[in-house]
Length: 380
Image (cartoon, rainbow, N blue to C red):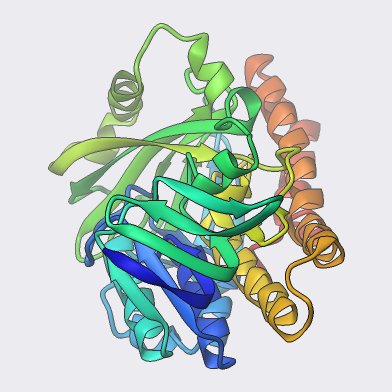
């Protein structure tokens, strides 16, 4: 039985949970983190880190260690339409492609180095309460209490159940399938990340990312309500995407099997906390609805949750005023831009469906929008 108490209990040791734990432990808080997995563990993902994500990891003191690991640079991105026309964008500084197996294990190492306690292979069945306040977590072999609980346990979070909220669906959920291939060709350069928008992937796209040690992350992504209207499963959609770009895979060979996962999209209209509780990362539905990116959002909300929890520990606990401030910061930094990105997603779906990308004026507008940062929270 893992039975005890701490200032803060963090459920989940992915990017959000580790970021929160690192910041809190470095500030002197007594932190316990539990995760049902045993590290190192892989995570189904596109493996892309925007340049703002790299900068945030640098601020957490992780860049040098991560830079020594195998990774690819992303200096250019292209949005490709069905007629092969494209709009492009250059990145300086570059983004990275870094497998989650390496990223998450390095975050886990830094979490433990910071002084936080990590308990692996521990499943949380539910969060415990005293009246309206969340006070800890319970599960098979687990009974833990804390002044603040941070739910960083992704899709289907224990925090959602504590808030009496269901798992996301419809336009607040996306589904994706990804696979790894060796020897993919890159006609526009091996530091270009390609995003393909076509009618077979409504409210979504397919991608081919630069290779890490010769292996490329390839996948498809689309909104769950659009996927529900199709007659193909995710693996068939991925196979169709590969067939449409067969020239890129003429000499390629699969590495492992395709995998699928779900992404909770923002801005989902739910509370992101309650007295004693904060939701971060995928648990809070903070994933970018246009790109499906979630690592920056996870790290950023993890840091925001840590700062909020620190205030709670110094004062009278995690009360309504602190919760309101956390919500406001999440909306300002993520929610507002996510709403704009959802509108852009709808516009691109219309452009693809009506083949408006063939018009020079539309391509010029797409290029202008793609290269601006007005509604881009994670890239410079």
